[in-house]
Amino acid sequence: MGFLQILSARKVYQTPEGSSVQALDDVTINIRNNEFLTLLGPSGCGKTTLLKCIAGFEDLDGGDLILDSKSLRSVPPHKRPFNTVFQNYALFPHMTVEQNVAYGMEVAGVSKVERDRRAGEALDLVGLSGFGGRRPTQLSGGQQQRVALARSLVLKPKVLLLDEPLSALDRKMRETMQIELKNLQHAVGITFVFVTHDQEEALAMSDRIAVLAQGRLQQLDTPTEVYDKPANEFVANFVGTSNMFAGTVASISGDRVILETGNGRRLAATSTAFRVGDQVRLVLRPEHLTILARDETGDADVPAIEGRVRETVFVGSTMQVHADIGHGRTALVSHPHTRRGSSDIAPGAEVRIGYSAASGHLIPMRSA
Ligand SMILES: Nc1ncnc2c1ncn2[C@@H]1O[C@H](COP(=O)(O)OP(=O)(O)OP(=O)(O)O)[C@@H](O)[C@H]1O
Ligand SMILES: [Mg+2]
Image (cartoon, rainbow, N blue to C red; front, side, top):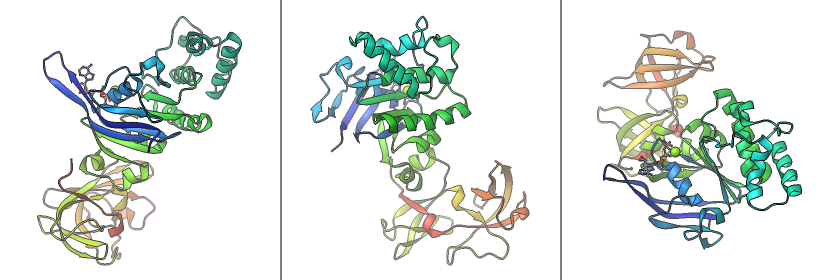
């Protein structure tokens, strides 16, 4: 049983245009104590709605929210032991950093001595001791972000709800803050529910990721599981880049599955979840494919994919090779520069693309 349970949550908005939007459709997530849980999904999938329902700013139309075995549905927002960090920080411009951080405690009736002590501690925790006397306009975006965090942390919530808190920062700052936020979460031992539409951010920071699309939960798993074993086509495309092949399971021997695509291509995967005749999709990540050197045979009895290089893109650590593989299809191969035969890879070159059956992940054809 989870510590904070979201049970079959439903939310329907009536729009001014007179239609209705199902923003949450039967979402169940058991959030664990001290967990860093990320809600990941494209714009409009219901992430903010779910946060607002947890915080109590919106009511659910169906389902329930249980904290420590008690329903929260009749508990008003200010009585819930949660705090929200909004995307735009919403700092008070006329107050100093210290006053911003202490404000919530003042409202809660915490004594001045205690307020000063806790504000000092929180600013220290986010690396901003010495900045207490400044106003928000005298800080960088990342520093303002950290003030917003400190302001929420001093209230010692059981759960901190964070709505795309890093989206306004530049890439370097974002990466630094990702690590800082993760460390902070470990240090304070508070459950974080973190919203992002950035899959790399979700993979880097989370204990578990809940992938949402159109108000529905698609997958709830660790970052590795979500990346290596996407539950369906949506997740395979949204998290990372995938080469995907539709086909029919032609033969199975042990956990080795051979599938055949409509145009006669034979491909291999490892799975025990399917039967001969099942319609499936094979997911191969670009880094699972390699361009074989002339004398290489690749994995035994995995048929290599024949192709012709259309384009190569240098992305620093690897080369992204786009290869035409027939029937109007392109494969994307992420090829390390250091691999043998790399110098032969140029537009127009005929190549054989290899992979191991173990890296081939199968998903059922008819999943959402
Ligand atoms: N108050 C509202 N009235 C009507 N529709 C709404 C309202 N708030 C949100 N919606 C709709 O509900 C859906 C989910 O919105 P939500 O804000 O939860 O998305 P999101 O996942 O947070 O997206 P983003 O990444 O863009 O912030 C969208 O289709 C949105 O247009
Ligand atoms: Mg949102």
